[in-house]
Image 1 (cartoon, rainbow, N blue to C red):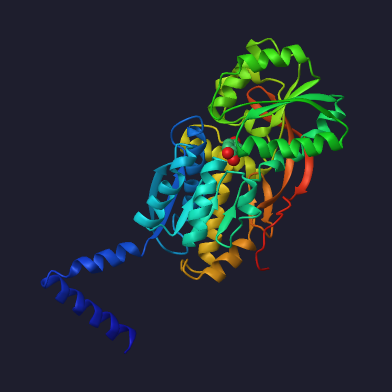
Image 2 (image 1 turned 90 degrees about the horizontal axis):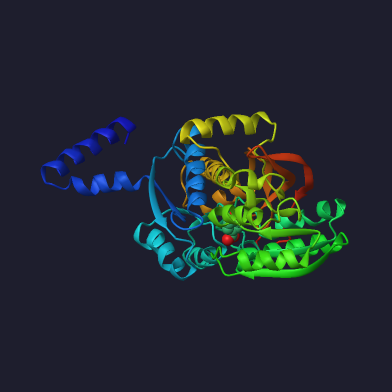
Length: 396
Ligand code: PHB
């Protein structure tokens, strides 16, 4: 049948269907032709702003590419995961089973990601992790359908120890939330700091997402280390920075951390944040046209300044666009989709990066200092840093 005759035959069938009231399935099919994209992110709690920044970034990247994925329209779905691991499987299944998403973008919290990881491995649904750094996701529990655009929890802190020791800060107290992200950030810190000749004199922690820091700050004051190093993020990070200054420690004991400490919180923390030193795969002040253009457009679109979470969301959008375009929107063509995503170079505001074999970014880590409510880049603390991917077995 020629194309023209096929079209005519189809429209005749449609007219017939309409007159017999059978048009509904046609419409349903037309709708399901849209790619279903689900966000599973925290929209409440201490990480609420992180979820919003990630969603903004994803939407901006896709909008800049014409708002479609491989030529197909998008239907969006959203679940608030509340950074609550015990609800993780149920929330992931809302998107996977109920909404039948083609791709699940999530999440922020490492414990919740472990639940998504289970659902992704069992269902085979494509999962893009726009933040959560839990090691297992791209180590022992890695999967062909799971890609991370952010970091592993130890990546930023693997770059932290040496610059501290180089500044003569040889005895440090470590403080964090007691859950996977804090514990794995500590692994990176311990390795880099002790290797550079530093000694960790005390490890302090409190349960996630507690922000009752007072007793721990009093303990730090009595220990009098050369420096404090930490992992905190989101609303809790802003409070930690303010409490650290209010306890009289700012200016007496230098505060260092993985860069999440000073992401998205500089307005809330105010001058208390000045002078904090961090390592991170992004910096507001990166003087590249790519970053400057991204920052301008993000600020214009969302009336707020982007942070590392917005960048990670943006890169998740870029990765999805590249994958979907390579298979012309046919996300069911998994071998070709994964191959395209594995081979992608992401032209990110943080600088170009590529995927490791285990599906985690190989990226530069910057040394930064807070000044005038901005993370200012001081230099590169680690070049093309890759996570070990230990225990991940994916076919090449
Ligand atoms: C995590 O739980 O993996 C996590 C959360 C917030 C961050 C970084 C890591 O800023």
